[in-house]
Length: 220
Image 1 (spheres, one colour):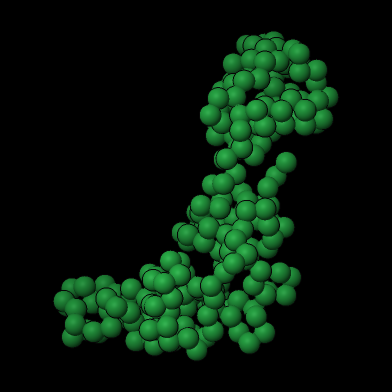
Image 2 (cartoon, rainbow, N blue to C red):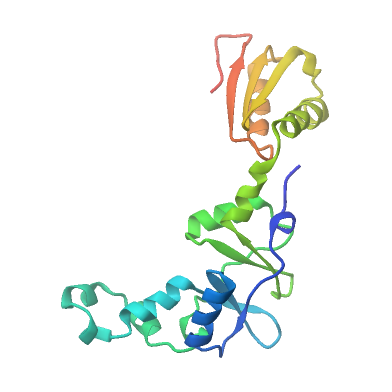
């Protein structure tokens, strides 16, 4: 069973309006122990995100060219320099925001975080309104499943449910999320499909192919 963003997201989210001042956000970051704020418009829609990195950009670069060595300022992008002059959330935020929906899979959220190099994503409804936040720690929560739960899903849902295979012909062991598959599958094509599907079972860290193939072809 695939976990969705709704299953792991945080619903208690600290957010700010576009007009929030730098000082307000700096204080909230420290007091609330968060590392970013979704920025909302008057209708509750997410229009951007301000992170601690955005605030640090201002702190580090607000001196402009006079406050930084020439070589460094020459490498700074114009956008960073403009952001350094900002005084409100609207000035400092990254927009448009990268968001996910509650019904999206955790894998989708993880892929977005990896590809876009962000630590968290606002979760929005169909109208773009904030309903939660998902972080890297939330994404990794899917690996909290026990070995017994993982093995049960592989046998019951994958082997019996999807492939209609009697699991007695295969031996499935799970240790610390690593699945080892042993036995004689029907053929190489079916074996590879089973292994591919098992890799996508929630909580699986890796799959070890110890299957005995009916032909010379082997697995991974």
